[in-house]
Length: 234
Image 1 (cartoon, rainbow, N blue to C red):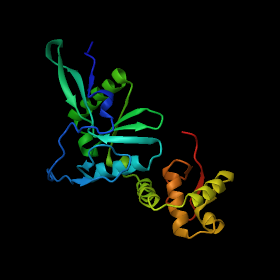
Image 2: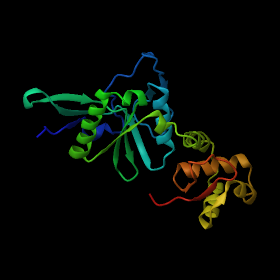
Image 3: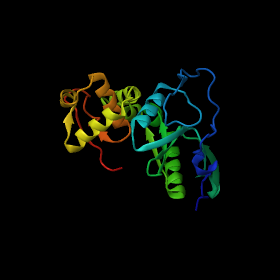
Image 4: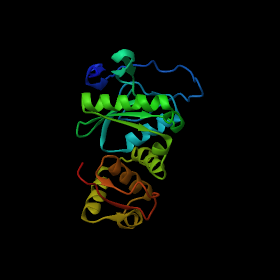
């Protein structure tokens, strides 16, 4: 039987000020893009190492089922079979650890499909997934560019994140929420029903989506025919 894996630090590193287990890059190496995330759900270090990581953060920020997330906030100590029936100790630090609004912990890795397809990673991924699930009851998800950059979902999430920050009218939010609660409306119908500037209506709708109050189909391009309905209980 393999030794039980462990997490350092405790609670998957999710705290008010989590430490980063890998030192953030000070410059671009191997063609990586170094940038800073503006996600309000992100706690601790904000520096991302690639555009793929940046896009993953946008999905988490736009998803109302996630409460918070942190970058490289813990390390998993796990064991793999070695020669003569022994076990070899390994350390893995995930890209992201996230907490849902229901308190569930999810560990995420953003990895280019070409790298994920390599044989040495396939075995490592299996061991890591088993360690997280069987030892800690936590889901481990590896997402490639085909998962993260699926359109029009990613573009819709970018709009949700950017435009929701421009909403500053609680009364308008109440009116829109009440209207949509009675029955679903398209964006065009809401423009015609609510006596307010289109820009204000749109920003407020995006804020309600961001807060998980209403929803629309992210798999369809956002436009005046998009239908908004009351969000299902999470």
